[in-house]
Amino acid sequence: MKNITLNQIVIDDKKTDYFFSVSKDLQKYFKKTNHLFLEYNIDLAGIPNSILAIPFVANVIPLIWITDSTLMVSELDKNFYDCLNKIKAAYQTMFPNIEFKGEIVVNTIVENTYTPEHEVASLFSGGLDALTTFIRIKDKQPFLITEYGWHEDDIQKSDVWEADKENAINFAKSHILENILIQSNYGNFINAQSIDRDFSRKLGDSWWHGLHHGLAIISAAIPMAFKLKIRYIYIASSNSPLYKVSCASDPTVDNEIKYASGGVVHDGYELNRQDKVKVLVDYYSISQETVNVRVCFKNEENCCKCEKCLRTIMGIIAEGENPVHYGFNIPVNVSRYIKTCLNNEVKFFTNIFIKIYWEIIQAKMKGNKEKILYKDLLEWFLDYNFVAERKKSLLKYRVTKFFPIIKRKIVTKFKRLSVYDG
Ligand SMILES: [Zn+2]
Image (cartoon, rainbow, N blue to C red; front, side, top):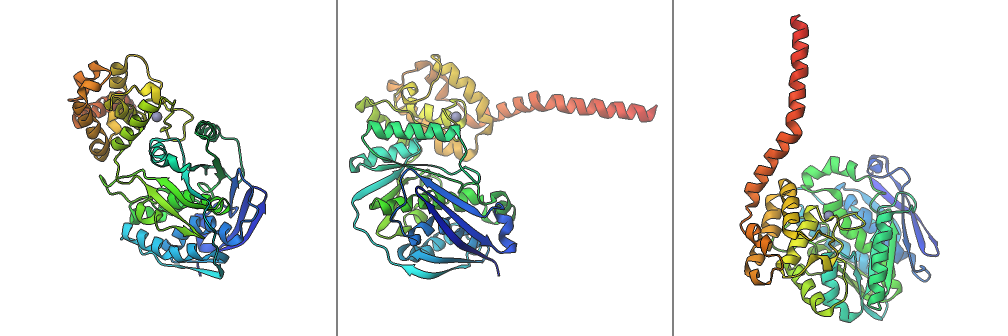
């Protein structure tokens, strides 16, 4: 029988370690240590095991479902246990090509309740989505939850985490808010490549993106929501109805998550990315606070060259603002800089990205022509044909990168032939 058993939860002040065993046929999906940990900046006193078990269950339950296995846990919170069927159903709708089966067996289901003392804790990466949600709910004085889930078996120094943490702490300080900081190995304790090898074709998505990350990120915060008596955990949407994608963090999944007396709100799904840039610009152009929008994935600073940086820079420009004021350190000759970067990066743009991000930015810039700070940018960007430019850029890329390789190969082959001939 395929199964996973949570054997032990060890609590040491601010850290909790989960030790579990896995049946032979599922072991390939885990790193050898069978160990998950979470470390908080707040101690874990007073949090029962039935609540602490939630992050463990949330991290492995999608695997239980797609492999038709059994998860065994000694104690679990009742509301969380009850919501699992709804989450399963939501995933089933999202991934119709795979059957979500399997079950969870709990010895003792515990009814936990609390009277909420705080309305909101919001996941906060410092990116555009998170900042938009922050602006929308800041009057509720949210706790800001910032996480790093990429440790190996233990905590090791990470410059990315240090930069994220510093940014979150400074941001909270300037708004007189409190941080919830969480470090974990949830992104690494499962062997995602091995799951992808067996399931990504059927899923049409990867394990981490399609099934894991939303539950991992949200559930890590649940013990703190319990401890601090928080009513809702907010997670900012990264998608919008513009383009339906399968994604572990989706309103149909996140909004179903319940624990003790708390719930989850998947915020801002109705807004597309440019709408969010407008929320940001409307707020910061008036408030005069300094802001650093952190969009570059797993980077300490915005690189200002990748597609995501470029699209955010251009989104801000399209709303009539200067990206330098939003944490994008770009050269003075903005038009020339963007053109060079865009021509270089456009070869990697997918049709979907062109449609849901870039053409919207272009349209916005057309509508806001008078407000755009860089007039020379308007001269070429408004008519920039992404598909044609991608074709051109790809051709150039192939000629410069591949032609010398092919040439080398032909020469070698020719040499070999001459040897044989000779
Ligand atoms: Zn970047």
